[in-house]
Each structure stands twice: as structure tokens, then as C-alpha cells.
Length: 93
Image 1 (cartoon, rainbow, N blue to C red):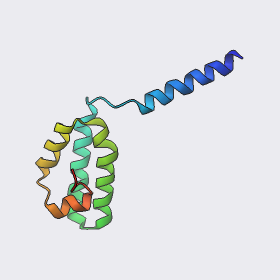
Image 2 (cartoon, helix red, strand yellow):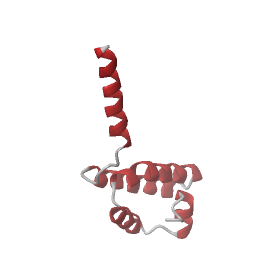
Image 3 (cartoon, rainbow, N blue to C red):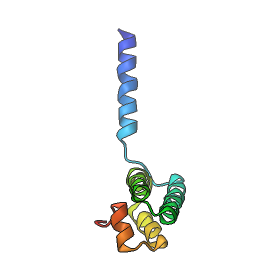
Image 4 (spheres, rainbow, N blue to C red):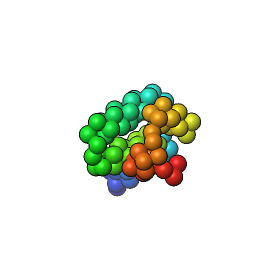
């Protein structure tokens, strides 16, 4: 019976940890650098799929680890064109 409660407690702790909002910290600069790298690659290769991958990584990782102001400054630093923003899926942001 005790083992069951231990398993339930660990499962709840993991669920809370996974669902908790991420705090902007040391991860944000790394994620922004990786996003910049993805955008440079997409610009060089000029393939739509690379733009979509960069946009998906942005939405999954940068939005999780960076505050809104940090995200906007990172995107502004890249000087993305409206077409590039559309390809990334960030035109609505």
C-alpha cells in the first residue's frame, strides 16, 4: 500500500514539474542563440521546411524559456522580413 502512495506522489510531482511555467533564466540566451542559428540556416538553404522547423522550435522552446520582452528583442535583432515572419508562423505575434 505504501508503494502505491509513493508512485502516486512521484507521478503528481512529475506532472506539476512538467506543467509548471518555466522561469526565464539561463536557458533563454541559449534558446535565442539556437533560434538565430536556425534562422541563418533557413536563410541560407531557402527551403520552406527549415523555416517551419525554426518556427516550431521558437514556439516550443523560446516561448517557454524567455519572457515576452526577450523574445521580441531576439526577433527584432534578426530583422526578419514580413515574408520570413510568415514562414516562421510568427506573423500574428
